[in-house]
Image 1 (tube, rainbow, N blue to C red):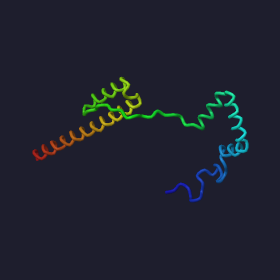
Image 2 (image 1 turned 120 degrees about the vertical axis):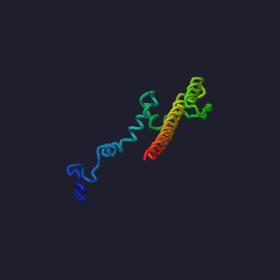
Image 3 (image 1 turned 60 degrees about the vertical axis):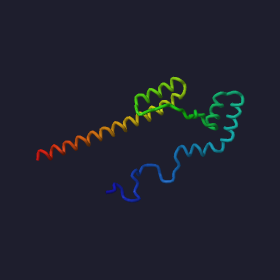
Image 4 (image 1 turned 90 degrees about the horizontal axis):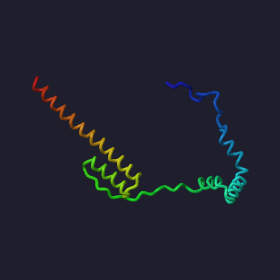
Length: 138
């Protein structure tokens, strides 16, 4: 059941339909002065104003992000040993700390999956035993 009738506002004293919000109004008022503001900012940056330089670079050039390169870390079925191998690789500089963290997160997720799988198998065995003992008693 609807709380409001179709076409009736849930907030009748709210902003009127089609009205501009404060940010839109501010942007419109700055539009005509924007070229002059940008020119002044560029002039400040050219004269050595570090803050102006930072503002321009932050807006124009994206921040550089480290790029991962593939790493070879010998992993096996023993999750503990695999975790130790990852830590050793990071310690030896063969993998970055970020790569090590990502791999360890994956190993942790795998550990939870394995644990859940083993618990499900144990529950199935217990349920089967319980059903068999229940049949024998009846």
